[in-house]
Length: 576
Image (cartoon, rainbow, N blue to C red):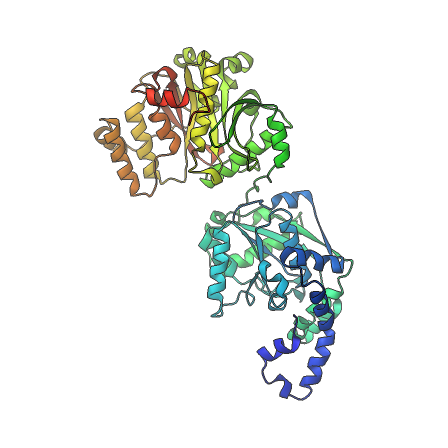
């Protein structure tokens, strides 16, 4: 319940002893509609959390508007620190919480003391006294860190108080830098939002005369907002690495982010001139039922023992499945600091390629996918330039005899929530099922990627290892932007990696341990798929359109797949 007297006495214990103190408290109770608010709480005491929030906004008929671009800028999942101006000091926070909840339910907001005293809101709020540096903030800060590490969204008003009238209009005061410490600690991106709203002239007048009186007026201001609408302008997300590049004190960065937010209300002002690089938010998930319906257009290749289905799916421009594949590709690749930077990872090559899709029937989720290209058909239709690989490597005449019976592989992913659950293995069952239906397929061919997030020395070691162990002696292709290890790494590789594969691999792993990284899964999987000479790492090329990852062009001879792998993958999909 709201208790104005208790709130005042906690801050000013002798308030009642001062002349006129009791009379002033009585006046403030009326001013803040204490009885009306408590009656509303009592009438709706059966409601909690978002249900109570919805009822509160419905009570005031208080709404918001947001355009499609702003809506799409809000990430549907993953940790994010949302920062905004605070023009109203009450209902703007509730409306913002409702808006973000319409996209994702895992959101909480840092609340001021007044709202924090309303018990039905407790599950939605992270209660903190305006993000100042008081002793009781340590536990609250830990709570916010835990929420972000749990991949939730946290809304913060960095000013820590309602906006006031200033010479340049209604503006927040100085932004505190607590939100930056939080983002830094959790490596969270920052989502800037400008809220277009304002309080009454009376509020600003009283705030100018006596700031605490203006604060006490905030409850009355809520009752002035009946039948009103505010607007949210959501900017593109700012990745933490963009903020980290600014070698300035946090106070200066907070000031610039405040300016960034206010410029969202003026599209003509160049946000691009500010030092923060932004990135497109990953597209929102596709409707689950639409996915299930669309998958019926694919060919069912088989089903795993735990109920996941493997489909062979052909491209359609309006396909929900293709849209979700593009979304999940970008989500997965960004997780390992790759990705295109677009909302979807779809390109012109998808239309002429086929797509192996692993489907979780229980959760209605695409677990992962593999893009496969029937090289003969693609070359007949579009020539060698129709192969995606041709954008990364110059293909030489010596490779052409392999292509009529080759399957170009690429753009494989397993979305993060399914990592460590045999999902990639299941996709390989699908590849095997395809090969059994198309026995003319003799080769796998295509790029596998190594993230640029790996330390340079680690990248050089991995590239040098596979060049030494499995490099091609034929002149099949050369990278358009070749990645060449340094001479000392090449010398080390010739000395340490030219012997037995298993022993050399142990040495590589030992060296990589120093950098805290491992050989990428697909590199290892392809390398151990075949007998000696069956898998070749032809060349390595940097991909500037994919966050500067290093692509290796591989060629696998299916007839040289080792018996154990052949038995595992080139058998019916319903095997274990």
